[in-house]
Length: 151
Image (cartoon, rainbow, N blue to C red; front, side, top):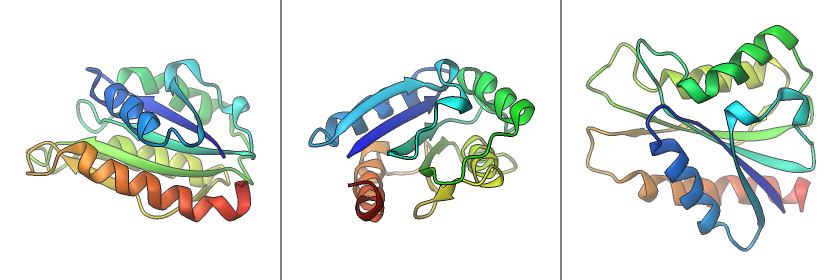
């Protein structure tokens, strides 16, 4: 299965997690790409997309995801047939905006016609869980949901 791990980051944490997820799924063909380097026109229905993103400021997308968000808003792409999942990184010390980056990307993708596999998972930097401990089972579950269509 072809899997693309797309990440949006401000400080590098989402990038590191995206790379860890790709290593964990090494029995598949996995690429890791910064959302700053990915255009909505590049989505391919033969690929599963795992989006890993942080939240910045007052609930905005992190810096590297902002060009992608702007392109989605400007281009209104038709993402029918695209399967994706979202893993958000955040800190519940900021409850008004906790994990809004992942929520915003999910909303953009669904509004464009893409299919969300599973539920968006949110990691809390103020919690006890390590991001990897949540991300690996999440990624495995999403791959299992997508396999019948993309295998």
